[in-house]
Image (cartoon, rainbow, N blue to C red):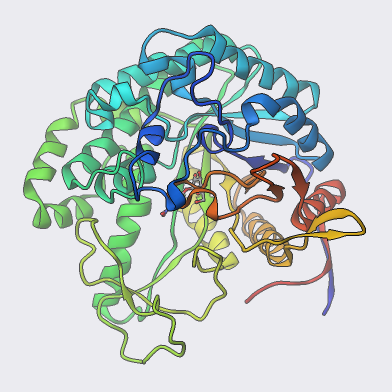
Length: 487
Ligand code: PNW
């Protein structure tokens, strides 16, 4: 193995990320009311193990310790989200007790010299607003704007970096069409309307915050896949990749950067559900796309894995007997019929997600060249990480987690980020998902993404080997040591 030493530019920011519902707990304290994730987690079968966010990492009571831990880790920035049902319970009046929590957190971060990176919506919509239609209703975009302004009233003097939404694909299609996330609906119409109203809320908040303070750094975080056709000369494979790319990537990037929804995807969906597309087209009102396509300073990219796609069952039998090979994309999603995910023989995470660091380079280059560069928008990797079956062991009385696969994962994806930068992409930072093990949505506590291990009985935090490696990388501002790259 060769030794490497690859330095990061001096302006590159190293961070770690979390989200309110996944770590805070204290779901009924200080005036907080239920979100759609509370109510969804109460539905039998919705979340593995019947887990809920009631306690989670108890971060609501431990934020000072958690910030001290981040300081020991050396992270320069911390990406967190504010909980709408704490700040404006039931989507109604502002709640000073809930707001105070974030005010203290921000003070703690600033005192520790950690840049607060605030996300306004990481999926915890007040249930009372879902009862009025949730994101299917246009009104929710206005309620979101009110909530954002309340957060800005309280924190705008200390927080400079604001992200409106985390992963609108998940908050719309995965939640209102796929049924896998709260509120667990399975309607094409609802998914389409939710996607538009989320983006509308994004645009309104950008406009209002910009008008209040032109010096804010404003942006959006989107999740992506890298859709590759099995055979670039086979029209069916190319079409499968086009459809996946269209819904995951272009459906959100086109309106934000070009002011229009991708026409090919609209037409695909019309073939499957004309009524849904009609409702969607009626929902897109004059002026909406101008709001949605306003300039953003920052685009956050969340990357976990790509997809190799075929338009028919692959001819070659898969090498392994893995049941996930040659699987037809399980699809409540419109126009995903007859698309097959092809087994690449890549290593996989505990969630069966493929590990493909080079996909991150490809993705960053593509988004930079096709969207962000012309718009003068800077890119950050706002999420990248993996769940593995970690084991806590005692060594000489000391708790350790030897998560060498996550160490390699982290190094490989940081390398992939540097590869993109060297290819000319303006990508200025990386957030590992997640700072600590937490409530992994539909998987509950069964999947651990943290570089910090959480014992959910005692709430003891233990730095995994990946945290120690991240601390070393951040300290040296370089990736050094034996190369561990995957192809
Ligand atoms: C993202 N999918 O969620 C979120 O932003 C995080 O809160 C989450 O913990 C992390 O990734 C790891 O999952 C996703 O099913 C959840 O395609 C599910 C999907 C994608 C992203």
